[in-house]
Image (cartoon, rainbow, N blue to C red; front, side, top):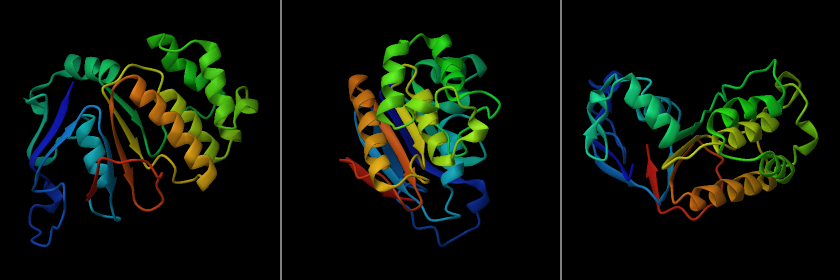
Amino acid sequence: MNTIALNNTLPRVFRNRSDIQSDIWHQDVTLERGHLYLVEAASGTGKSSLCSYLIGYRQDYDGTISFDGRDIREMCTYDWTVARQRSLSTMFQELRLFPELTAWENVQIKNQLTHHKNDAELRGWFDRLGIGDKCNVKLAHMSIGQQQRVALIRALCQPFDFLLADEPVSHLDDENSQVLGELMMEEVRRQGAGAIITSIGHHMHLPYDSTFKL
């Protein structure tokens, strides 16, 4: 996948509003593989909706969203399965980790399916993110900031053309945010991928190609 295009897209819940001022909604926007994008959003402007649209979880919008020119409303379940395995990786705002499993087990759930990274690489990532001593700790006993780092590692355990990171550092301090951002960008560049990062405030200081106000 090389492009994600939004053409006159608008959440239907905003359909009757005349005060929409956005760089995304009701605009023609094309996101390209190999580029880094920041989407800054205030509460209530549709950030969660946008993320859900891009990964195919919701379709309650007007206008179109296209992958390489194909309207995503035409995609069947199999198409979405393939896209999420090979083209789209997501770090969810709500993380969607398993609290009863350890940090290592949460990552291995995906990596054992993709075989994308070896154990040494994964342990290196855990160490770099300052959670090397948490591999065998259950998620329920880890802080939200530690869990965010686990979620990033899991998101990087697959091939992708675009990485969608929804508020990836909302619970991290500046130092840990910088390390997470560096690791994320190393893998994004290694794969020649694009990245779409959302924020409602605190965000990583990265060389964004474009910043959109939602």
